[in-house]
Structures are given as structure tokens and as C-alpha cells.
Length: 217
Image (cartoon, rainbow, N blue to C red; front, side, top):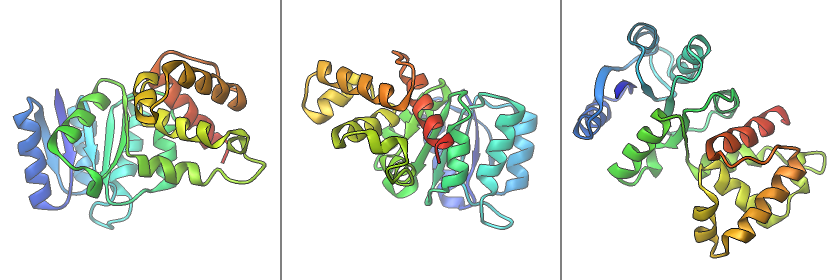
């Protein structure tokens, strides 16, 4: 599994390289700036990109912009964003293109190596890996009675947030200490209220919900 890594802090970049190599990833490139990332993604065609949002030269949103451009040229390119910030506009664009293989983790909430490595593998295989705080911030913009989420009950909103993290009905039931049957009912109600087709494909249903939220903003 070939990885392009973009992180401007040397110690963190070096640590991530060592961690990924220890878990059988091949580091195709480890870069520190937006222009380097753009070249690496275009020329090396990695299996997954792990990208910080804010990179030199401007330290604004180069990393995420490069990732979005790379996915436009190569739809479905797996991208895991690792950042200190939630860039809502670009996060929504990344999540809403519907082609899978996306993740967004906050650096200060990655608590162990296994959690991070699992997220990279999940995204590389076409799944999703979303930090709960990222989901909360994205959902927070959907407010007011004119928004589709206003139709959901507090429990349905809770289930939706866990669903958007990539959790299965089994995992959601365990987290909320209820039966899978109850979660299936909540899920069906959520999809009905949001006008979405019910699907057993966990990745597809997460992307569908996120896409719906994006288009409803």
C-alpha cells in the first residue's frame, strides 16, 4: 500500500513515516509543502494520501486544496485529512463527491497508533474515517426549522452522527446500549425523513448522508 504523506512539521512527519512503515505501508513520498504534494499526487499515483490541511507557502488550505484537485483528476483517490482544524467548506466538498475513500481526523484527538493506522487502512480500502468532532461541526450548520435535520428526533440525530463516523448498526447499538432492531428502525426513519434510499452498504450510506447535508446547506 503506497502512501503520499504531507506534513510540514519535521518531527511529526518523520514519526508518521516510521509508524506507517512499521505497519507495512510503503512511503512513496513524504513532503512538507503544497507544491510538493501536488507533484507527488500527480506523478506517483499513491494508493492513499495522508494530508495536513495547512501547508507552506501560505499555511492556509494548500493540503486540502491539493487533495481535492487530485480527486477531481483521479476520482476515488483515497484521502485522509489529518489536521488541527475543521475547514468546513472544503471538508464538505471532499466528503460530498460520493466516490468514497475519505477521512478527516483532528491531530489532538488521535490517541494511539492503532487508531491512526486503522483509519489509514479503512480509507485506503474505500471506507470512511471521521472524527466525531468533525461530524458535530458539519451537522451544527444544519439548524433551523427549514433544515432537513430539524425533522429528526434527538435520538435520530445521535444515530446519524455515529452513522457518519462509519459505524455499523451493530456498533451503534453497542455504543447506545440498545438493540440492533432499534437502531435499524431509527436508521430507516432517518433515511425516510431525509429522502434517502435505505442501503446496507455502510460506506455508501455515510457518503449519501454527508452529501445530502452538503447540498442542503
